[in-house]
Length: 138
Image (cartoon, rainbow, N blue to C red):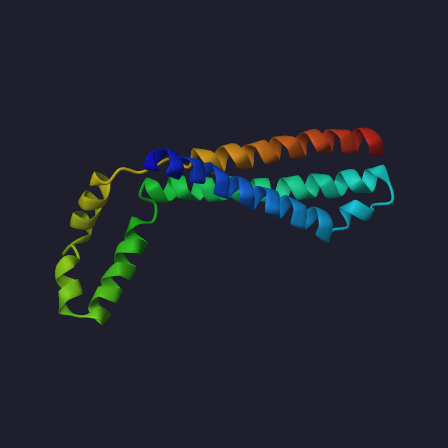
């Protein structure tokens, strides 16, 4: 049951962020008080595109991080903080970068499917609204 709940939250949180970003942009840019259909479609397209692009980029960044793109930076920062914290933390830290990478590769990583799917859905909706915008504008 706990796995189902955590899987649900992996979808609810990005969806909530996307919806919150959408409504904040729609209201903040004056979409509810737009004078023309063209202006409303432009604001609607922006309100869908920006949260969609952000969620998709965060998902792609998470994929890169899961595949080890930031291992060297993470090891360096952890090594620095272990030096500042004391002897007990230094003993817990792997001695070499190679050891750190071997330990890190042993841990399973999850692909952020929810971020990519929700972000991609918002981007697809933005493209559809963009087509309506071009049709109305021109």
